[in-house]
Image 1 (tube, one colour):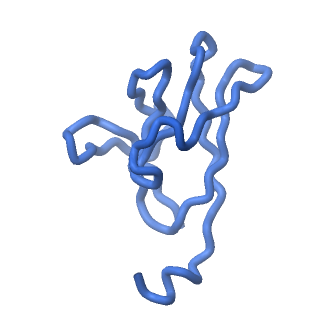
Image 2 (cartoon, rainbow, N blue to C red):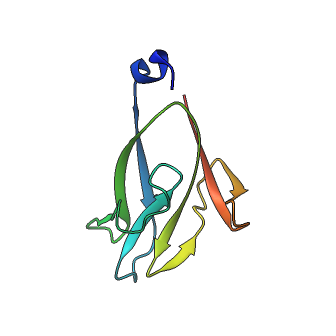
Image 3 (tube, rainbow, N blue to C red):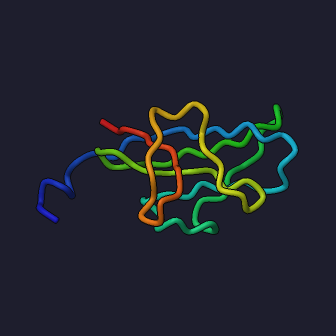
Length: 94
C-alpha cells in the first residue's frame, strides 16, 4: 500500500436489502473477506434491512446473506463473480 492509499477518504455507502420475511441478513463482500458475521444488517420499521459501511475508492464485490442464502442486490450497479465463480453484486465507490 502506498501512502496515498492511507489518505484517501472513505465513503459511506448505504446497503438496503428488501427481505421482509428474513430472520437474519448480513452483508458479505471483498471488503470483509466474505465473513457472514462481520457486517450484520439491522431490520428497519418497514421490514427492509439497512447497513451503512465506509468503503475505499474502487469497485467492491458484495452480496446479501439472507438466512444463509447468498442473494444478489437487485439495485446493484452491476453483477460480477467471486473467485469461486459465484454471481455477486458490484458497487463502484468514487
